Length: 98
Image 1 (tube, helix red, strand yellow):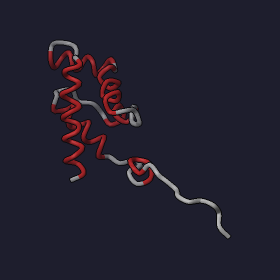
Image 2 (image 1 turned 180 degrees about the vertical axis):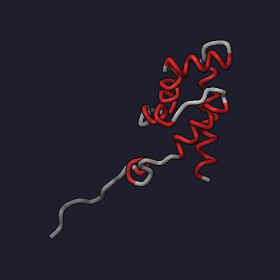
Image 3 (image 1 turned 90 degrees about the vertical axis):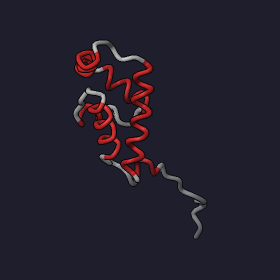
Image 4 (image 1 turned 30 degrees about the vertical axis):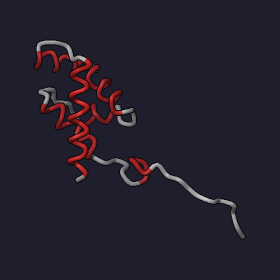
């Protein structure tokens, strides 16, 4: 008896195989710590599932994190800062999987 199902597709990236993976959290933690803005795993995980740029923006927009940024850099973060963090996150994620 044939069921009529031709194919089943899965979103493998984080759903089936990677669920709970620490690599993205560790990469984000490393990048923010290197930017002199340490952030804990709970804060990073709070926004998991968002698009990557929105994830970084959400973290930086948290009042305590925004204050850490000001303490470290003497000014509020900018879109250019987010661009640099995004590139560093991309590199850190790549290192985590290779």
